[in-house]
Image (cartoon, rainbow over the protein chains, first blue to last red):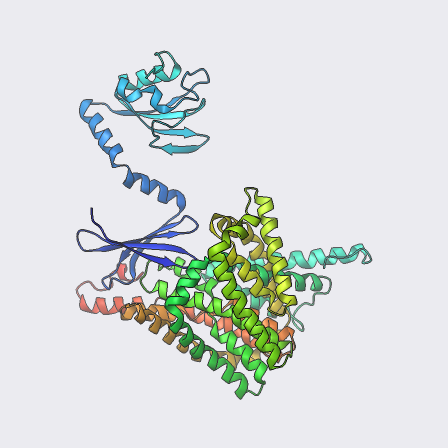
Length: 167
Length: 407
C-alpha cells in the first residue's frame, strides 16, 4: 500500500487528510468535528480546491460503506456466478424465532444456504455488514442476498423451522 | 432583569411584546441573510441601529433584560470559541504562528489606533479602535471557508492559525482594555496584564495536563445536567474574572478551553442555540445603544478604515500563506479571507462605549464591521475567477465554457 497521507490540523474545525492518487492527482478528505466530510479535488496549483463535494454525516457513511466494503461486492459477484437469479429480500425475525437475542453467526446462514446477510434493519436504522457477533433481536429485518432457494432456507432458519445452529 | 413583583402586569405584557417583536424580527433577518449569502451579524447591528435611541422605536420595558442578555451573550460567544479549540491546538498554533501573530497585530492594530489619535479621540479610544481593527472574525471566516468548500485548501491552516493567535491574544488584550477603562494607573494595568498572561498560560498548561478533571467536573451523560453544569461553571468563572477586572469574556474563553473531548463537543452542541439567542441580543443591543443618526457622520471614517485595514489584513494573510509554502493564488485567497471583522470587534467597542469612551466608537465599529464583511464577501471568488480567466485566454477555442464560471 505505502500511500503517504498528509494530515493538516484545522483548529476549531477538524482535520484535512490529503493523498496522491496513482495518476498523480491529489484529493483531500476534510473531517469536520460535526461529522460532515468534504471531498476535495485539488486544482492545477495543488493548493486549492477545484471541486469540493460536501457530505453530511449520513452521506459520508453511505459512501464509506460503498468504498469500504469491497468484500461485500466480491461476495455478490461470487453469488452472481453460482446462480442466474440473485435477489435481495428483507426477512423478519419473529418474536418466536430461536435466533432472537442470539448472535448472527449462530444462524450459520451462509454456510448452510449460500445466501449472505448483508445488513440488519432495526428501528429504522441500518446496521450494514453485521459481523458474526452481531446480536439479532425480535422485530429486526434481515437484508439477505442469495438465490430464491437460499433465501427460502434462510427464512426457515430465522423462523426456527430449521434446527438452530449448534456449533 | 425579569419584571419583579412591584411592577404591574402591564409591564410584563410590554416586556413580552417588545422581546417577542425583537426576536421575531431577528428571525426574519436571519432568513434575509441566508438569502443574500452573507453572515447575519451585520444585519443584527443595522437592525439595532435603526431601532436605537432616536431611531424608529424606543424600548422601555425590556431594556434591563436586554442589557443582561447582552452580557450573557458575550460570555456565551467566548465560551463557545474556547470549546472549539483544544489546548493542544492553541499550543501548536502559538508555536508555529507566533511571528505571523506579531505581524498581524502590528499591521492591523496600528491603523485603528492611529485614526483615533488623529481624530483626537484620546488614547483610550486609540487602544479600543486598535483592537477593533486588529481581530478578524473567526466565526464569520470559519463559516465562509466551509461554505466556499475551502477547508481542504493548503492556505486554510495558515488562515485558521492567524485566527487562533488573535483569539488567544484577546485573552491578554481584553484584561488590558478592562483595566485601562477602569481608569487604573500604570500599576493596575500591569497587574491586569500579568494576571491575564499568568491565567492564560496556566489554563493552557493545566488544560493539557488536567483538562480531564475539569471535564469530569461537568461531564455527564444527562444532557440537561451537562447544559446547566457547563453554563453554570462558565457564568461563575466569568463573574469571578469580571470581579478581578480580568474581563468576564476572558474567563468564559478559558472555561471553554479547559473543557475538552467529547464533553466539549456535546456542550458546544447544547450551548449553540443559547449562544445564537443571546449573541443576537448582544449585537442588536449594541446597535440599539447608538442612534441611526450618528452613523452617517462616521461613515467616511469607516470606509477609510475598511480600505486601509482590508489591505493590511491582506498582507497578513498573504505572508502567512507564503510561509506555509503556498503558491500565489492561494496567498491571494488567504489574504482576502482574513478581511472580515466581527464579534470581537463589537465586544471590544461595547466594552469601551459602556465605560464612557467616545460614543462615536459605537456607530463607527458597527459600520466598519458591516463594511468589512460585505467587502470580503464580494471579493472572495476573485483569485480563482482571475485564474480561470487566464486559463480561458489560454484555451480560446473553448470560449465561455460554463464550467469555469463557478471556479
